[in-house]
Length: 431
Image 1: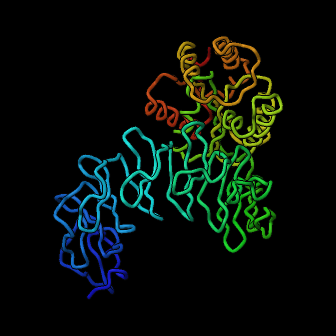
Image 2: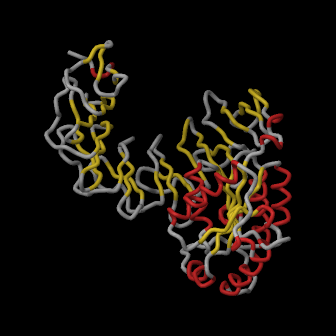
Image 3: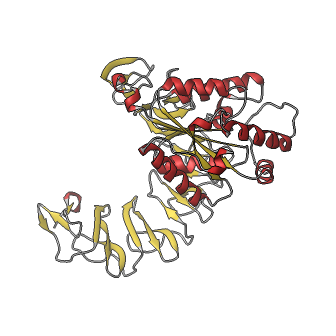
């Protein structure tokens, strides 16, 4: 009998091989690898299902898409939504989702019709009541979630409880006791208690492998660091390549509070696969509503602006700290562009007052309605000829446009700006 564990998918993806020979006569539009208990997902002319090692259907039902079995449960997309099936084809749960992941360590990520992520247990029921902006797979009894309250990441246990109180811009699962993490200053590692393993920050880090991890410094070197963040070996030095001729793009999305900057930057960063940094995220990580906290937040944000590589930055673009931000951007040697996201004052006011958890910002005794009106005037001056940002202005964006259209427009503008010298702003953007 053919051992499914050592079969391979044929080069054309239509069938399976054992020792280089087809193991059945049938051909499909697409096949995936076999998984325990010895079933493989296939796609045929009449739908998707699972087959055994002889090429026979494991059940009679047909779906839109099928995926591999993990812990004897497979994710499928049906006509009425996503769910899981058991090896005999019977559904694990009655609920239907807009997407399902694969089971890992007795838990599986799903996304409901409202776009909220959570985990289900092996019996198909909810593992906990909380809902998140995003959730990942479990590894070593911990999963990463992005919290709805502040948009930041943390770790939860299989029951949905927070493992530690640390919130970060980005976070990974644990590997050998440490997890990759990012705050406004860069990437680093945290321990099981959510504490930084060291003080240094990097452009990027990989998980630890036998006590060392690959890291890319903001200066342009590739190094191996130990669990104290100390350099143990330098692999390559790219600092000579970080010249003006190889400047990386940095795009600032500027606009009034409530214009939609955070939403746009989050979607745009995912689309372009760029890093991002925002002053509000820095406030949530480093601020506490005090003057000292505001200075700490801006110090972290300015430090992020100096880091190497393509980057999206988000703030209002006006205020006492802007000269420091511009100095950091100029000293990076990178190509700087600005997108001005505009929305009517009344729209901004409505959005701001409806925020469930605003970032910790010092109370200067000015009503938010007046803040919005004042910022609009200062921004118009900053974007006008001889203004702070006019020379760097790529174009103006409509903050009331649908998000998909807004992201596509911003992406197109950045593409054109990257390929050539920054084009002349539109008449509206000239002010």
